[in-house]
Image (cartoon, rainbow, N blue to C red):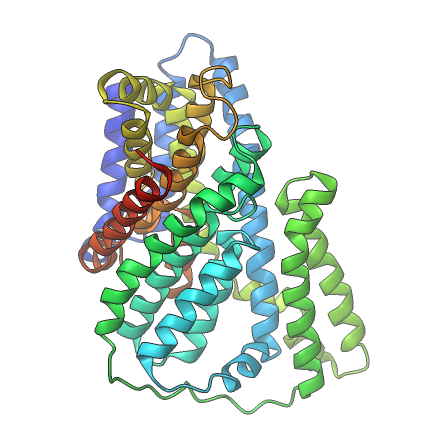
Length: 421
């Protein structure tokens, strides 16, 4: 059963990788792969009832991610409808691609440590699409956003879901993960960024021309400020209430919905409809959300079947030490979602084996958080950016994966230098 399940999973990934060659949308393949994986699993277990319960459990977790993605995208689209990004673009003083790349990379890194890396990737990728007219430039810049968002999220207890899992589980403390992982996380971004930025040295760009709009600037400022405030409010809401982030983003969307309704209540019906949250929801890239759903469904079968747990045990048995296990899990997270991998590690090792803030947990937070950048569909930030800019899987693999791998290795080396092997 395991061989057949893994075979379906790998075949689905291969077809997704060659989406532009075979001319079949990746979302369709992802959905079929996710469903077929569960069909194979259900038909090969003793208790169908147990399998269905596992499916509902995973669907609950997946739904929380999808609702978060839906809410964040709706807020970003609402800001765009009100020309909020034009206000930010007008503040961009440089026309140098070299400088702008560094501004984007560093800004994304910083923001993702406060927001989570998924929201940061959505906001920054949307901004790049608005700013840069050239498609090839946008592919490079959005890829840097994915790298920077994952690197910035790795050292913050709020920045990446796996770091948050380890923090909530008591494996790491907030102070130690920031102290021990900040410099390695910087290395994950800076080393590839130095190389990539050379490509854009002495190159300039012209901003995308803004479309004339009847929207008053004060309205744009209000929606922009409110949208950013509510996005920043989500991690605070999570900390105060202990509710999952999707609850915070839904609350934020609801409040913003009321605010926009009040703002435009006296305007003509056609303008109210154009600037409503309903219009922003229509602009969301739904196929990308369905792609995310299919991928997570497929991965969840590997978790339910025990394959990921078995994989972690094999790593522990055959690798030299726990650093080898951390590196292996980080590399695997480039293909498989890092959440079940970290969950498997938490199940394998208790706090008696590796106590709180043990180097293994800190190292795992680094590798699992940054390994997903190596392949575009290896992280939530990558999947979101892929949907916003429609990055070709093979383009990313050919042009960017080795650079992301170099950043991954650089972070590991710097971790050893700073913390000892």
